[in-house]
Image 1 (cartoon, helix red, strand yellow):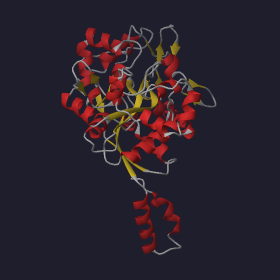
Image 2: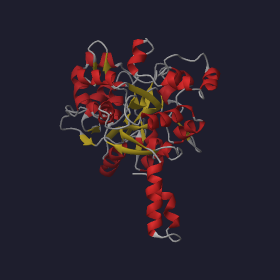
Image 3: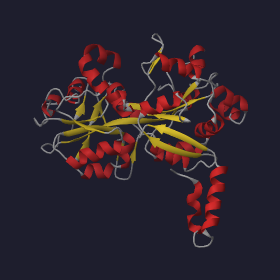
Image 4: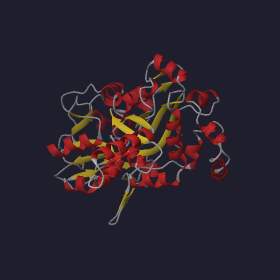
Amino acid sequence: MRLRYKILCASLGVVGVAGVIAAISIDYKQIPIVYANGSSSVLPLIQALSEKHHKQDIISNAGGSSLGIIEAVEQRTNIGVSSRSPNIDFEQQSVEKSHVVYDKWKQNQLKTYTIAWDGIGIIYKLNKTNHELVLTKDNIIKLFKAFTGNEQVSYYDLDPQLPKTPILAYSRTGGANASGTAEAFLTSNPLISKKEFKKKYHDIYKVIEAGTYGKLIRSTEESNTQAWTNISKDNVDGSITYLSTGFILKNYDQIIAKGYKIAYLQNKDLKNYLPFEINENKQEIVNVAKTYGWYRPFNLVFSLNMQGIKNTKEFVWWLLTNKKVEKIIQESGFIPLTFEQKNSMFLKPYKDEQSFQEAINNQSAKNNFFVSDFELIESNRINILGAKSA
């Protein structure tokens, strides 16, 4: 729990304990608190951003994307943090596969704000070859089959130039229903559409979605940190898992030192791409949204009629409009939104970025942005929750 009292620690030798306690108490009352619960992938970014934001104290707790979304719907947290888009079915009138949640989404005026994009990277350990693993439209289903744990798959099955080492997949407990990272792994890859995957390979899809794995996989908790800790501790030849590209970038030297590699992805142009450019001086996540293409949204979900919404709005508006935010997002290893993507979340889009910049200090701009998802849906502005990806 991060509170402003930490700036007073250096004063302990100068002022009395009672004075420090009094100062902490006063400071605590003066600074509004905004609670953010949900995805462990997003929370480090929220924490990094909150360090530069001084009007509210952002208290964040992990628990998974699904929990964060439901906590926001039930108004048990100011912000639900999710590393995936909320699942909405307009025809069935359901959100998160629930009619009740759909009704509450409308009643409590939920708003979904996309703060950044994050890629999905595949890391693997293969000792007996210098040949790289390239994921293609021809072998991607075989990889997903390995992540079900129901059938033995080898690297040779993915590419005959690779050894016949068995694939040992590390999958997230609870599957895509519980983990935003698992959902992005399952549904956001550019090699096969979600619709085609569900129709042609329904059994494989359902296992990874529900987390009902077979005996041939090893389960990890939802967080990228825990997934990496488990796979690196075991350090088994043939092991493989999926991680946030932001996490991979920040831990790149450690991952490579442990003998793990990052898989390439073959895109529509039949060229092979890594999630980010790698050179001697720095790594940049420039390929994720352009040529690599395997990425997911980082979303904040909040109720517009919840008590304390003023503080939530101030924090979100700062995220949307402050120029420091984009730099923090990039330094944290993630991808900022373009103007067009931000503009897609307004009720009445702005003609261009200049007109948006001219309007941001006016209350009318805030009124234009802080409208519920359903108001945007009913105005035919969106058919998804959050920003458009392209």
